Amino acid sequence: MIKVIIADDHKLVREAWNLLLSRDKRLSIIAICENGRQVIEACKTLSPDVVLMDINMDPVSGIEATKAIRGFTHDIRIIGISVHTDLPYVNALMHAGANGYVTKNSSGEEMIRAIMLVMEGKRYFCKEIADIIG
Image (cartoon, rainbow, N blue to C red; front, side):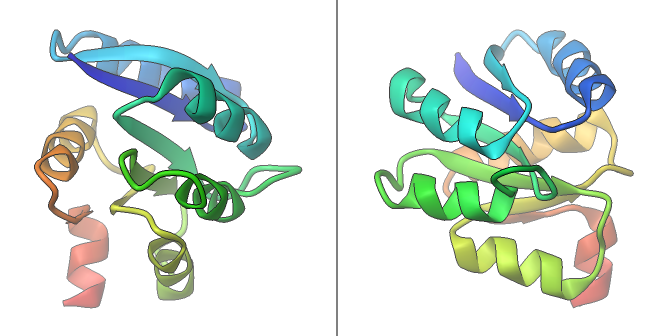
């Protein structure tokens, strides 16, 4: 069972990802966080396999939270989630230590594919981003 934490500052987005991902028997949603500070603490105490990390959160952004998590472990896979398709956002998150990037236009099926691939040690970019970066 893959232990997943969802981190997003929008309640509807958190609920939607939880609903979609909970249908897959390989996944267990172990925490749902509404900001970067919460997700850092949850990672310290719960040791998830994967974090789905929104980039734009206050008071601690997903980029800052990713850097903080990388400060104490490289075992947790982090997949950035954002509405942004601009390369500076993608690059900032990847340089912070993320393992993948999926836009909020992506399907639940694509998110599950991303989780499975980063669990195999691969990097993942959704089709929308892969088309931009070539």
